[in-house]
Length: 145
Image 1: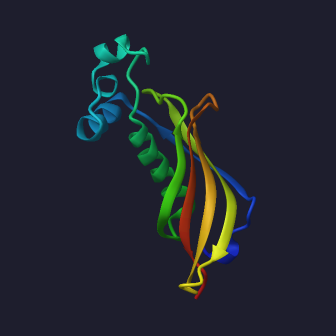
Image 2 (image 1 turned 45 degrees about the vertical axis):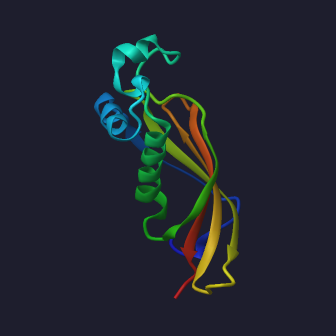
């Protein structure tokens, strides 16, 4: 995606390969979400998750990394927000994440003719094709020079 004109409603893109490590799960959680099932393997084993899992916010951050590296790096002018975010399944050490996006809408901004707003459905899946995260996003995109 490079400009608003290149965006087609209904278009689907699939990309990415990001391997999640135990060390990364624990490091992120210690800093931002220090619940026992994110930072302590013994406590996690006794939890309803039956083992260490990534914070949902960490899953969001990994998804964003994949989006920037593979889809929006030269187009995005920021976001107006995320709606309906769902943490659907736990992400575990060794999972390999990938992302699927579907453009659900686009419109020019009346307040700024240089920008448009593109809405998308984003799904992050693991190596088993289980969806671990889903969200609706809205991104500002350049409308051309």
